[in-house]
Length: 106
Length: 106
DNA sequence: TATTTTGTTCGCAAAATTACGAACAATTTC
DNA sequence: GAAATTGTTCGTAATTTTGCGAACAAAATA
Image (cartoon, rainbow over the protein chains, first blue to last red):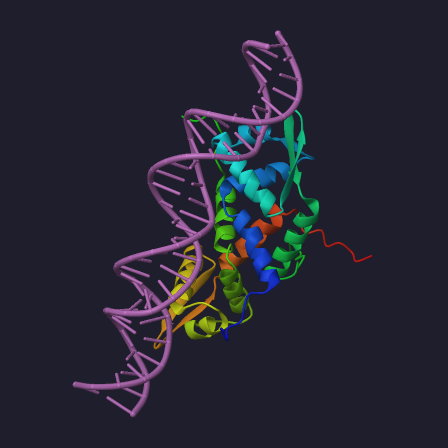
């Protein structure tokens, strides 16, 4: 019934990615994973100052946002960046902040 | 007492910006403001499908995150992007997603 | 001075987030 | 088969977020 504009799909997608990145632990996880092919839960946990149950929860949120993916490789679970969505996020943020200016340093 | 690494200032700053951007209404507000010099509360409210009290709250959060600033110009209040922090955010996100590749289209 | 306009703040409610330890499941190793 | 390793899920608690209407404050206007 509202006459007001609704949010666009892009706005919602960008908000979803942003929200997933809205916690330092999740930023740290993403940066950690972005540096390597993949990594097991334990290595990620080691890097973070929080309990494993909490790490597991953060990983779940990142997975649900589509930024990472996990794969069971007994006895471990390997996590890695979801490259496709990572590229999408990168593009959405770039667009959001204004296109890449590639400014010269001088 | 923890042996675990703590989060870096950059990680926390990026998380703070991300969190502020973690809601479609706030994305919409930022995009709206990014397109113009400044804008009063009313114009922003008109664009959004939510009550003014809620809009005011979202603006407050964006202000606290440093992404926008408000100035009273009786009888209106003008909001605008905080250019300095906007540039900082842009840089942090760019760094996060990997430096600008400026890929050729072909 | 009374009224209107413009936004903010208050008080409340519902839902989501963050965090942890304990319990659990699956697999591997002893 | 028993024990150890690796993560997830459960249950709980504290805090934050989201949203709204009503009340409020400040300035402009009638």
